[in-house]
Amino acid sequence: MRSLEEVVRELRAFAGAPHKSLSIYMTLGPRGAGTNDRAQLMELLRPLRGTTDDPPSFEAAVAVAETSLGRLRPRPWAVAVFTCPARGLDIIVPLRTPVESSAHWQEELHLAPLLAVLDEHEPMLVMLLDTRRARLFRVFMREIEEIETLRRSPSRRNPRGNSPGRARHGRSGMPTGMGYDTGIEGHEDEGVRKHVDGAIAMLKRADPTEAIGRILVGGPVEAVSRFLDRLPAAVRSRVAAASNLPVNSSPAEVLTHMAEQEAGLERASELELIEELIEGFGHSCIGSAAVSEAVADGKVQTLVYASGATVTGFECSACRWIMPADSSAAPERGCPRCGTPMRHDDDLVAVMVRRVMSLGGTVEELRGAGADRLRAFEGVGALLRYVPASPAAAGP
Image (cartoon, rainbow, N blue to C red; front, side, top):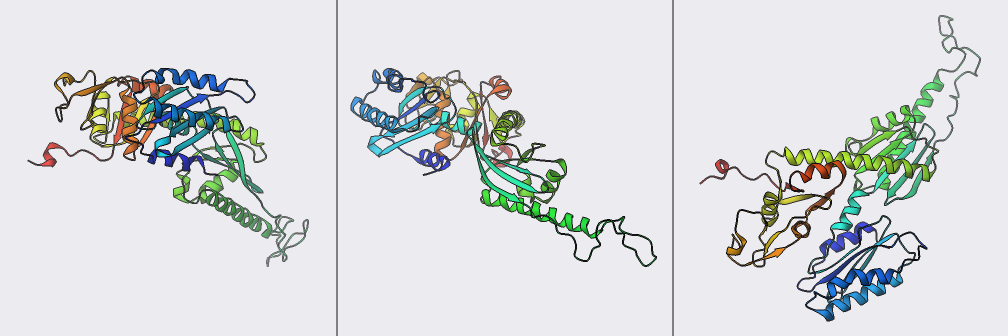
């Protein structure tokens, strides 16, 4: 069975044009809720049926989607369905978090809601350890899996040491061991070091390509400190938080703790991203006019938009130039780049998302305080692939 990451890579690489594809998002609710999924699907598709210019192709895509939904077992909380019979596409993605139900019939797959869910719930590794045990979990989409467990063998007394309660004496005749073998402490410290190194090796095995961007470490302060000190710098930079979560915590307790941590980390990351957009010093832009132009020129590496943001505007069918409706250019005179008549679009943000993804860029949907801050700038911003040359640097 393919991983969700592999499925998303296939969807992002899919090119259906000139054929249209059907993208459907549905929240089905908890298992056993008794919801009539087909009735919900038909209600979502009803507006599209009245506007499609190719009813046979549309109905063929709907039939594939219905069949895929009927085969889906067990029933997930939500689902994303992508079909294009002309190109042989039939992919259904079970989701463990609710999504806003919607349906889209267009040449490009509508991936923004799916990518937003993945961004909000990106995979995380959780390492819990003390001086005797280490446990590694993978958390993704509100599900947890314990990957590996490490137990340290009990320390053995130094064979040359004295028995507890018997002091060792040096050449001066003074006791040196306070009643115990001083070699035990060094032996214990060496055992802890090897245990920590074993936990680090366990972490590397779970993520050999360092694809997971966030790691959380929990346990007693001393054990966590030793673990972090011995981590390679490249791995330590991905540790998002450390806590005193006990090593014997149940998976349910780890999951609850992670949900609290994840929400806070995501919001903090979004606020940092907003500051980077505002103070980008040439490698970012913000506002619908600047971002539309950067997207049209293929300069955007990361498109950022506030959840629910909408920008109305125009798109050229020839050169694919896009601009917001309040642009200084007059669309009735034709495209400012090539003169071709432009068509009106009620959701220019969706056009930007598809365009950036088609060029290998990434998309970030912001919520909470980060989204509120971005809405002051028309709800869109972008990090650019490169810093534009200044007029002086560009030369005559």
